[in-house]
Image (cartoon, rainbow, N blue to C red; front, side, top):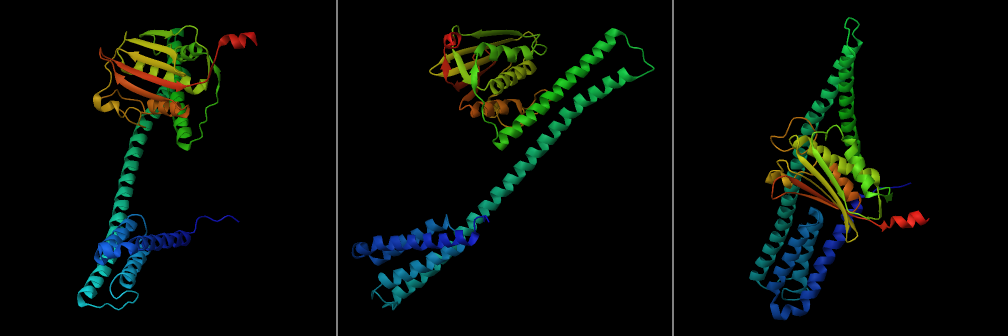
Length: 360
């Protein structure tokens, strides 16, 4: 039978740690008491109680406070090795020390508890805000393609309408485009779920960087048809051991983002190289770029810039970062000096010359 952690066991450990800390401070002060004075020892013991109250629960702290007062009395206040206090002044000091040590433990733990409650309240508020953002975004994103598919298919099924071949083709294209949008949304949600659960483990195999980049570009043929896309992959690159699917999706998401937020006939460039045992992929455009306040948040889940076009869930770029993190790589974004945005992907990868495979 397997048991979880016992709260009383954890509390017992705190008692041991608290009392051990007080005893250690007292032992360290004992040979110095004649030099620094027993009143200074009280301050050091009180400091130890204060430190403990920042980490321990209330009752272990109170136990440490009481123990520190008794130890100070027995070992340091004259006459030594007795609980008898020789002067009224020392008696008052002992009483004040005892009260201050207890109050210090109580107030500090209460402050910690209040801070913890405030933090939990803020986390709940942020979670509620994130849920609202996600729900509103997903509601719109799901409703739009579903409504398109419903309307187009309803028109095709209408028996009292006689559609020309051209009209039927247009309706089929609408259904196809809406289905693609819906599939893209589902993929993003599934990918984000896998990232959140920590189940994504790169399945690395030998990849051709040319094939990796062009696969992503070709998947976006329709979205990029009004953009000037150039691909430049350094010559004679070796093969790299990567997860083709994850990195192809990462490049796809960045290019798809560029297809949405750059005007028609914009230039989009994809460059790939291998430097210092890292694959370096840069994706640039000459669109409007990012606002300064957006640069630090573009990879956050569900984050969408103010004034951005309607639609979208704000998941695409956060998924890119998650896939790069899974590879031990990193991604950064910046605005180009001449205008536009530049994404730089750096992925550490094992490499092997293509000739090695040809000979085999």
